[in-house]
Amino acid sequence: MKAICWEGINKVSTERVPDPTILNPRDAIVRVLLSSVCGSDLHLLGGYIPAMREGDIIGHEFMGEIIEVGPEVKKLKKGDRVVVCSVLSCGGCEFCQREEYSLCDNSNAEPEWTEKAYGYPVAGIFGYSHALGGYAGSHAEYTRIPFAENTCFKIPEGVSNESALFTSDAFPTGYMAADFAGIQPGDTVVVWGCGGVGLMAMHSAWLLGAGRVIAIDQYPYRLEQARTRANAEVLNFREVDVLQALKEMTGGRGPDRCIDCVGMEADSTGIEKLYDYAKQYARLQNDRPAVLRQAIMACRKGGTVSVIGVYGGFIDKFPMGAAMNKGLTFRMGQQFGQKYIPTLLDIVARGEVDPAYLLTHKLSLDMGQEGYMMFKEKTDKNMRSVFAPAG
Amino acid sequence: METKHKTNVTTTGRVISVLGGAALAYYGWNRKASPLSKSLTTFGAYLIFRGASGYCAFNDALHIDKGHSDNKGFEVKSSVTILKPREEVYQFWRQLENLPKFMDYLEEVREADGKRSHWVAKIPKNIINKEALSTVEWDAEIIHQEENSRIAWRSLPASEIENSGEVRFTDAPANRGTVVQATISYHPPLGLAGELAAGLLNPAFRELVKQDLRRFKRLLEAGEIPTIIGQPSGRKNGKY
Image 1 (spheres, chains in turn purple, brown):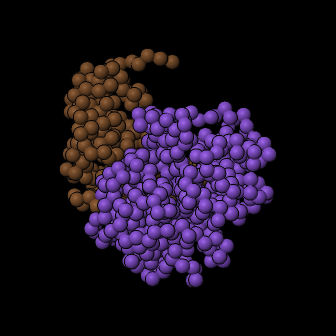
Image 2: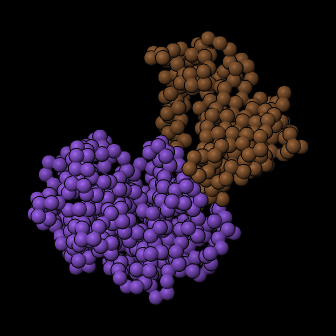
Image 3: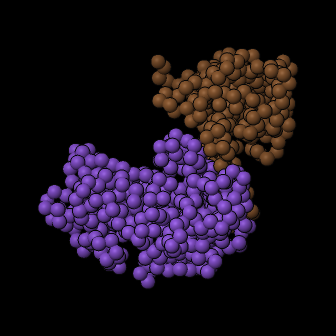
């Protein structure tokens, strides 16, 4: 089959590889219909996640059709149209029992990496480096799905492939960010980052009772999406002083809930930008935490900072004094997809939110490099490049 | 409480540690990045330190002072929590035929009667080339068992690998399942080769026991042991 493989920094290539087979009793094989790029893939492409190996098949946000199931898979059958959660969970460990699926003890096939780096191993994720299990990703004609009954969700009739696709990752991730923010009715919610996850966090903030949603980015076309699709007030951090603007907009109180949907490769301005780039280049910090710093500074006293943008390692100049003395609450984590996906599929089926608009460029697997570069460079108003292996 | 590191490695052991450590570190460093090569490099660096300083943290932790006394073998302790009732966890282990399902190098265990059993393992011929395996066999007997809480065994005299072990099963607090604590010890043959084997293999052995317990947990909680061996990739050498 064809698959898009990571070959090195900013380099992917479409290769012929063997078809996947059932390796464990709870596995299934899915014929991939749509597979999206994700902002977190850019950390892999940029070389910021160290456990990549040349030839790794990438991609983790996808939907398709079941073509084969292992002997222990009872609730799925050949022909089922499913959306696949990007994060793997065994269902049987303490964390899965608590619905904290991305903390699963057992789904990471290469637990040694994160056990060393983080103290304990975290869950496996499709196509997201050997630190997160080394699982072959979804930018391929077929993908093996471990723990298939936990990982696959049947798509309700009447929901299109395009609308269902983003309930794999962008929507549940954004929804969890809003959930973790602890939104109270009428709260002012600020979302940094107007990519797929950020936009979904804005829709979710409304669903969870926000009174006001403010979006921050630097790309006018993405801010336009936030304004028109997600009904957000928008701030371009290239044009305004964000901290001052947020204070003004909230009568001097500051926003109640601050959501970081950017993560480790944040762009910033001025001296802070030079500082973070230099330290990252010199390997003195792994991540550039400009958004996180800004969110902490912006947040009102006693407010919540919810972090869903991906961080990998160490950060520098973390304003702990501000966080502590203002009594902030922090919530963060990779998505607990299995907890949210059924609810979100219902929301999509009822037409309350239709994430299909994120799909701006549908491409063949042969267009892997072009798809990623367009997404990375934000050309042609790209929101998400989506590969359609079957055309 | 002593604050300064004491010497607890024999002179021969120190020389071997430095040489072996340097070789391992060099080998690991030159290999492609993988958990194995990283572990080799780290372990090699540790051995160099061990040889140069004459201090071994493992010996210290296990109260082995080989700088000053004879080698009495070594033991490894490791524990894991499994979200399953204690009876189920104990019974799965007590059925010794199950052990090869999660113990990496174990090929087969046959219970002769309620007490005696025959063990077959394939172990690497040396620490560098994990692919080259040789078969070892031994007989063991259960020397102690308490239903649902403890099982202990030891190899019978004249075994190729003299070893013993004990596994304790206790309830984890707040309904968090069962804590499994394994203590495995083995006595390498005496002499220089034995000293070398013990010094070099102890950390690797510790890692092995830990991995085996992890697989045990996975098998019971997930019903299978997650793997990526056999999946496709774009690597020309066909490696998963």
